[in-house]
Image 1 (cartoon, one colour):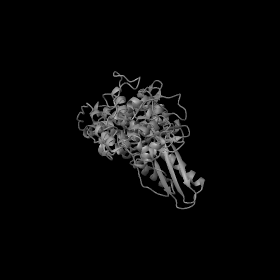
Image 2 (cartoon, one colour):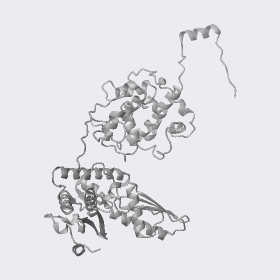
Image 3 (cartoon, rainbow, N blue to C red):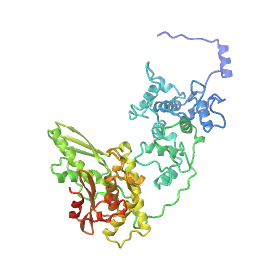
Image 4 (cartoon, rainbow, N blue to C red):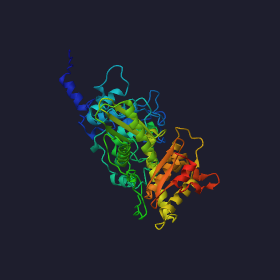
Length: 490
């Protein structure tokens, strides 16, 4: 390679240095001091004026050299963004922090034929800010949760001190603020990190984040500029009330695992129905939906299918746990079998549905106790009757439900007041178990109902059929086995 050198006469060089023409200050390496507004916004975006909601943020992006807007001279504050576009901005911020230049980080990874986001992604991956968790999503619309994930890792933690740590921790833990984010929300730790750093305060006075909502360019600009300018960071004006100590009857804090009281021993290679039942109970007690088995020898598809069907039948007997389908993968030679349980139609939302259902049931339990509908001197039969009546009075059978309806799980009963038989039974069994009453679901090919141990005696209870057209039908409460068989044999 040939290098050409240009020599200036000594006097001219001295003059150039004296007036400081085109000689920028040397950038620090890996320093927030590199976040400097090197330009002045003068209306470069035709749709961003001083009265625009995100005026300060869009202007700041321009001044920091992080955006020049769209090719038509606009910024588009209300427009959506792709995951790849979020990655581009994150890559620029990291590069500006590391080198003082927003583009130098990605420059080393540019090749012909790339998508625009690819060199920025490669750069962020090279510094450990991202891995491959978003592969296949870069060209799709970015959710606010995905945006939080990308931004939370874009800079080293020390550049975003958790100035709101105590406030956000108390507000979130007490469920008084940011209530649309739970531990089941994708990237919830990243979302909370942005609140703690003052990069986000939510969209309203309750701190609502909207994790599944599409992020807009304006909202992204607000978060991006707060990352580079501490003066723009927010401290929410929240008053977190002290949560009174729960009364003795409260079941607040009960987890799904707490509801599994039957034998729960893990058998890695269960060979009997009892061992399969115990292994499934163990899985549920550990609050996971995956059961790993290893028979250590050759296994046929028929054998794997038999284990799968038996395990699914057990899971359905725990209908309050809201699992009603299973996916089975197995290795023929090694005999490894993996059963992954889920719920038809719930998809990736199932963890959030389960969290909502459990909290709704806990709230109902505590309210009925607080209002004196249930008291400590009542028998289990009397308590079960109160819940039977409540279910029948507060739910309507979903006649339009198909095989893929959410009405097959207890969630819709608490959320919308609709269900079909497995939804009725799941909600009822959940309430009974919160009351400490042992129960399980029993089914035939067309129907499912509850078997509960009340005051030491086994009874069959059918909340679905008890929800009669003319009111609560107590014929279906506390049936003997013979009575139950007369209504629905199994």
